[in-house]
Image (cartoon, rainbow, N blue to C red; front, side):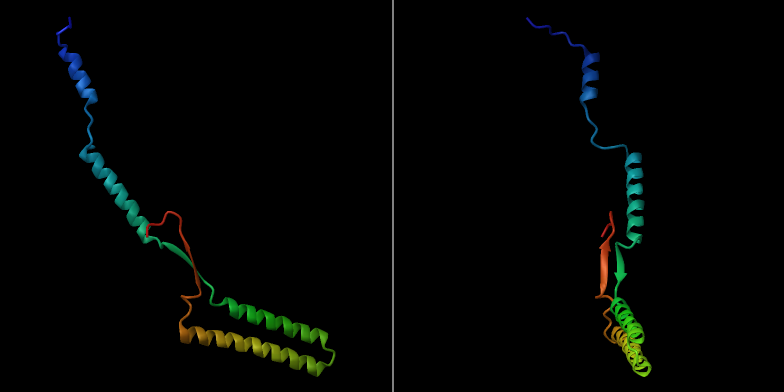
Length: 125
């Protein structure tokens, strides 16, 4: 009916190939863990976000606008005294805007609030 002979060599080879080792060798495990910890330490040392502070932007736009107005007043107004007065007034307002911006930043500490934060790619937070 059935062949009851046992071929132990083939059976051992099949059992050895079917047997799976879920645990890697300890040396490989230690090397992989060390590499992972090194990479994680390097990523943690780098800042996770880029910061772009924009506190100076209103001051620069104000100064640029009033400087252009002073230039235009100097060119367009024909009366020399009136043109110098208008240009001087514009430059004064531009300088006052710079001063107000610097004092406001110093007193209120809003530099951190006027900051754009961009997350780095692949950053560990």
